[in-house]
Image (cartoon, rainbow, N blue to C red):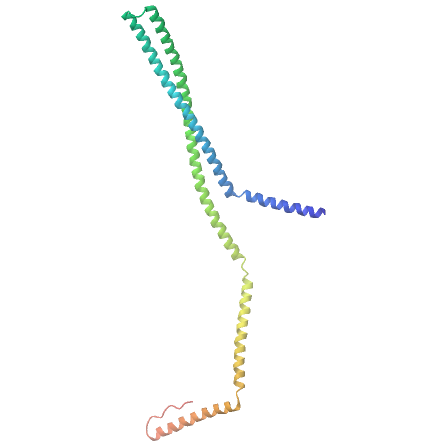
Length: 241
């Protein structure tokens, strides 16, 4: 019983190795690797889009803060102009103009922060664009190589099968069959000749006599014709042998 389970375990182990070898088919693994790289490419493109969006937002914020600085400065100038026109108390104008300038200063700080963020994001965008470009190029190269190698593998497999079949041809067996066929044909030819001889030997005495007489009569007729031609001075006919 122990031997039975040991053999059963060996069979299962062999099947497991066969399945593992099939799973580790280079063609299958390469195609799966390319699919994995395409997933990474999609994720990289998504990350690139997100960072680009942050760079755009930082740029828009910088433009907004820059516009605010100009707006607050113009308001401070307008407040000071109202004093000259006498429509606003100088002290109140100074207070409001000072607050406008303070707001301008805050916008300037915010502008610098937005510009720094924009610079950082744009640098990240450049790196991601380079990485995405290299990844696309690599995937394209790998796909082309995989197609070429797959085609070569199919050709080599077909060639291997043909060569294997040629190597397994039983030349000795084929020659032996040809020899047997040749022997059979020769036996049939000899048997046909034997039946022909038997047919001749089985002729009746009457048939044999008639055959001899026909041959003799033919010879006598030829001799008589030759003699008549000689007497008449003509050319004697050829005598049939």
